[in-house]
Amino acid sequence: MVLFTGRMSYQKGADMLVNAIPEILNNRWDTRFVFIGDGGMRQYCEQCASQRGVLDACRFLGRVSDETLSDCMNACDIACVPSRNEPFGIVVLEAWDAAKPVIATDAVHLIDNFSNGILGYKNPESIAWCVNYSMGDLEATKKMGRNGKKLVETTYNWDRIADDTVKVYRRLDE
Image 1 (tube, rainbow, N blue to C red):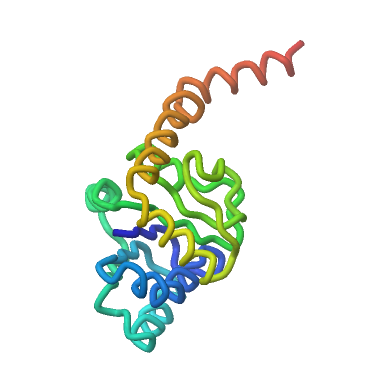
Image 2 (tube, one colour):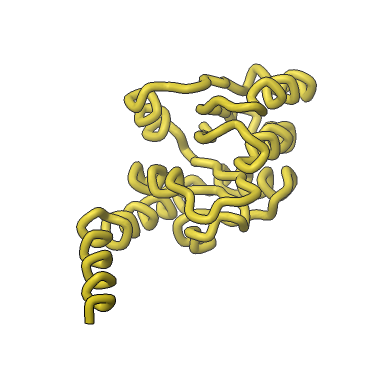
C-alpha cells in the first residue's frame, strides 16, 4: 500500500500521485493507495482517480484520528510525499519513525536518495517510476525504511533537538 498523508492542496502534490497511479497499476496491478487529509483538492483528486479508472485502487479517508493515521502508517509499504514545495516535511519523519521508506519529490530536502527513500521529480511519470522501483524490490525498500528509522532515532529525536537548541542559546549568550 502507498500512503499519502497531508493537506490536499496543490503544494502537497496529491494530484501528481493520483496521475501516477495508472502507470503504477500497469506494473503492479495489486497496489493500493490511501489518501489521508482534507483540503481544496480532495474532490479534484477523487474525480481524477475516477476519470482515469483507478478509483477502485484508492481510498480517500479525509481527516482521521491519530490512531487511524498511525495504523495506516504502520500498514503501508511506502509513504509518498509528492510535494511541489516542502521545506522540512514532518510526514517524512513520521514515516521514518514507523520504519517506512519515503518516496518524495526533489522539493523534500530530508531524503538521502536510495538510503532512506527515493527522490523523484515533480511529475507523475517520475513518481510512478519511483513507486514501481520500490515495489519491485521490497527488501531494499524495507532497508530504506530502517535507515530512516535510525536517522530519526539519532538525529531527529527530541533529546537531540533540545541539546542542539541549548547549544545555540549558549553560543548567543557568549
